[in-house]
Image (spheres, helix red, strand yellow):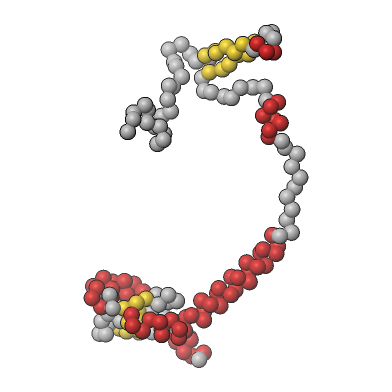
Length: 167
């Protein structure tokens, strides 16, 4: 079995093309040849199925289920899945010991305590603090140089806005 496994990995080993029996291809070039020959022989390609464990395995469609159950590469894939599952379990155990640090932030409280108004490019709002609290005066100030103005719209149209056009 060891010799067969080593032999299958030999890049110089000649493999027979499933599309043209006269083609003998080196193993290292076989995947590239399969793509080329599949395009050149679409009638044969429609009768063959690709093994889910090794794309180099081109099997007649009627025999694919038998091939899947007996494919040598299946055990390699299954072993990889088992190894990945084990490593995920170990990672999960390592992550489960982490605890969230205590949070002393209160965004709602910060919002109510915020005294400044939201930033709008090119404009500012002036609040006259001398007036009574229930009668605050908001005055609009423009800090732009003369001859400049604030854009009236965004540089793009939002998909949910019609610009007043009914559709």
